[in-house]
Every structure is written in C-alpha cells, then in structure tokens.
Image (cartoon, rainbow, N blue to C red; front, top):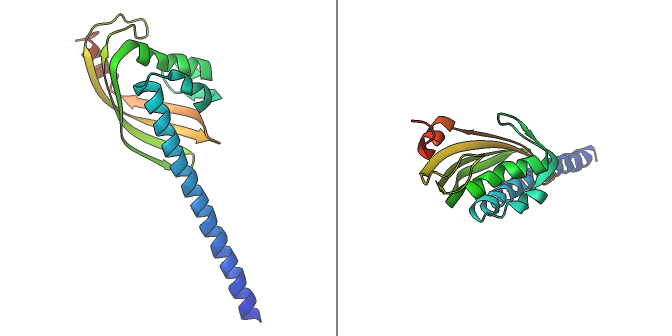
Length: 160
C-alpha cells in the first residue's frame, strides 16, 4: 500500500512539473510570436497603432533619454516610419526565457523624411542590432536596443 501511495505521489509530482514546464515553454513561444508580429506590423507595414495594444501603459524604453509611457514610446518609433521609406526590419534570430526576450535584427531603409528633427538626406542605411524586451501578461513592459549609433549616423550622412 505504501509503495502504491508513493508511486501515485511521484506520478502527480512529475506530471505537475512537466505541466508547468510545458506552460512556461508555451508562454515563451507565444511571446516570440507576438513580439515578432508587433515589429512586422509597426515598422515594415508602418502601422504604428499596433503599439497601442502591444505596450503596457507604463512601458519603459531604455534609451538616452529614457522614454516612459505608451504614448511617448509610440511617438519614438513613429520617427522610424516617417523618417524612412523602403523600410525592412528583419528579425534574424529571436528567443525567450521566462518573461525576457532577445531579438537580433537588421534595419534597412532610405532616409526620405524627417527623423527626430533631422531632415531627409536621401541616404540608405543598413544597421544591425539587438533588443532585450520584457513581456508580462501579453504586454511589452520594457525594451532596450543596442546598435552602433555612430555607424547609423554616418550612413545617414550626419557625421563623417
């Protein structure tokens, strides 16, 4: 009888652990799919309004200066849509662990409109970078981009 109770208890524990692991993996996979779609729609399609539902209201973008709040974050990324034509935002690799997500990307385009107050130069750009994001309950709560700003500004023609 003790062996049977121990076997049932062990089976229950193993099932619970497996179930939690599967649940965590599903959330991570869902976050990758969600995040990839957000940037496909926002940048490649230019439909920046997707950020109204993708961002948490108190989202933080770790940039200089730091950007706080959904409306400010949306305005930040709108500069890329209005500043560049022929935009291609290519996700090269993306993976998640828990509520964190890492995206390795490439951004290409032609600087054909105002970009953070910089008038159009007509120059083409091609930069690579990486983003670390936090996604909680299906909302982006935090992002930090890493890319070579010097190279980016050189390609636009702002610096030599």
